[in-house]
Length: 82
Image (cartoon, rainbow, N blue to C red):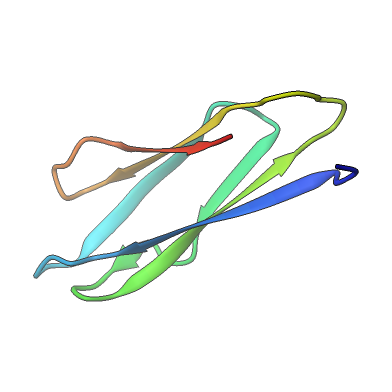
């Protein structure tokens, strides 16, 4: 309860036959930073999106969104932190 920063890991894996490029990672708050462990994910490879939330003076339930944009033609993926 006294944490000033929280970290969440979102693992991912490319199950397809071709490499996927992570083109962009967006967050919906300046209090949230998110980065991928690798931007080019080969076939069968895996990685993790690491999100760090600065708690600051916030109390109660908080919801933040990390949006991951890739070059594989799929819609952007939304990762939610509660």
